[in-house]
Length: 212
Image 1 (tube, rainbow, N blue to C red):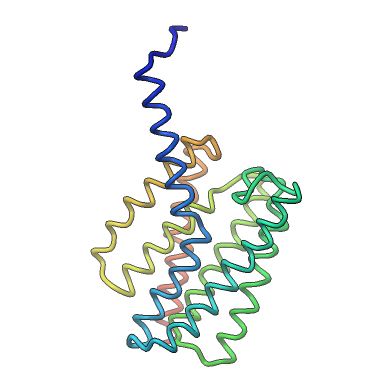
Image 2: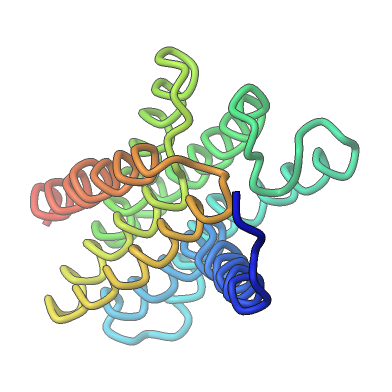
């Protein structure tokens, strides 16, 4: 095996930095916190109060509360970090995400929220439940980064403009980052991206149309 040259080492460090940036900047909790606010702004007719009400309801129950549980568990050593890269350690984080978002979903229904927000929360729940089943029933560590990024892109294309398909470049970047960091295989991120488009995007499009 030939020794690594300084230029190769520099290139490797640059790839690692770019991968870390993508993994953190495009993490699931970031998408799940920001997406509801962006969608709510459009579907409420740019009403600031309703945007905060419905957007934060989904964002807090789908992102901040579960993330608080995950970070606390990571600090206590219950799993290997806030991305929970070990498959076996994902049960409690999944349960926290599903339970918290389910409560938010009920509030959306009772509060007569815009149908697009109900569809968004339902799509997120569907992705979580299916990812949970794949992770533990099939013992396959599907990428949540890929699922969330791909599903969110489809939703934004529907709510705003099909030209936002350009965000699939961000999806590709975060998928590459997970493989570069050796947290996932190419198969796991590809399966995640397809699941996000078909399930996350599909459930949103179907429910948004059915509830309109």
